[in-house]
Image (cartoon, rainbow, N blue to C red; front, side, top):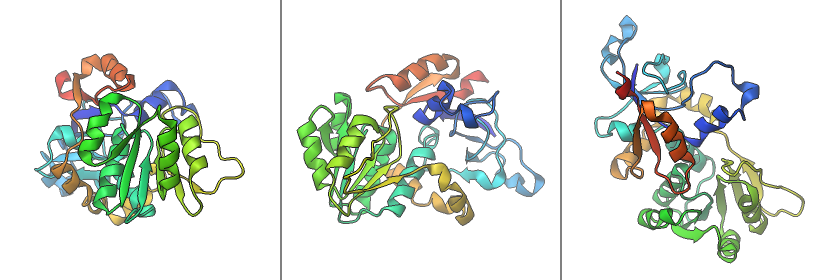
Length: 283
């Protein structure tokens, strides 16, 4: 397929930094998601040529053309623009999978790293699934109004008292930052509650010493992909497409592929917009 857009995600930057050196074979192309059009297919799948797809589990998407197994190519509905479809896999699918594993109906939900794309997806889906209340811990003030707009109650990362109170109220917490904040939230939660660690934006782990009352869980999307693929990836996306059509994620900042260094800098800038590489600019 010919790639049109590919986002720059934290999950892309971690292996670039060398953190996954033990399971990354070099040379390699970065990028775990994107969108493009099928330009070549086996004769039995010739009807797919010209259609827009997501190349799941393909080789790195930060290039103009990628090979993708047919059973991992998810067709994009006409109602979803390329710029939205490019981000439809990692964060939305992770959010939907976590909420299937840990249902939130009638529960109080707390999100850390609430300004991140994945956390916003978790919060929006939690509200759609009937959560009683959704609170979000944010770092950058630029995220505060966006959280309110989508129905998430904002809590500043600097307000430790409010974080402690929210943690004690929460029935389930989804943590994307780790470090001191994740450790503090986990330590304040009640018995028979759940703490789900799915990210490590601080680069520091959550400390899980003795005396904890909540149940601690780790979530990695790669551990669940085989099950989703077995059920059919088109079916797995059936919940995601309507949500993205009705309420797209926040406006990204698009960079021509030649400006990849600026895109990486934007991804690491506190309060920065989601950067997306325009690979069509290379054609």
